[in-house]
Image (spheres, helix red, strand yellow):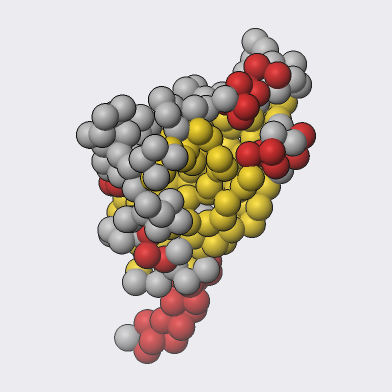
Length: 220
């Protein structure tokens, strides 16, 4: 019994070290949104993160074959939906269970929900707004190699995901770029999501989440 008590501190230290090492591996996930040709990547230096500081590097860009973004420029210059006109792009975080909520695609005359403030959408956390001409700059372009479909993205931002996004014990969180369309006739906005990337997560304890690569895509 004395030997047990002597070895107990060493045993506890080993458990703590194993837990620390398990959360220290680099994490990377890449994804191409096939509907829009938009590429994403998320990188983190840890797989386990404090819920108050879920900060990672988020990469995003329009991708074009052989280094050209020409094939994707229609998404930037056009984008009108009926009487709606594309005015800007917005970055959002949200929990995966709200991915298909009717705020985005609802029962209006043209199949889209009309709402008054795209910066304040239920269950969606507004990150920042990008002017349409800024998104059209080379800053947000990427390189897509055919036929391997390997790609690279130059632009990234270190962003902190709000802890309120992680509202379930285990779930999915989403990072999305969305086109914001405005209608003078309706005096309202609709959102046209042009791409997203998602990760699974689960709580290790009340203060820590573990990042996991998802097995299944979200329904578009």
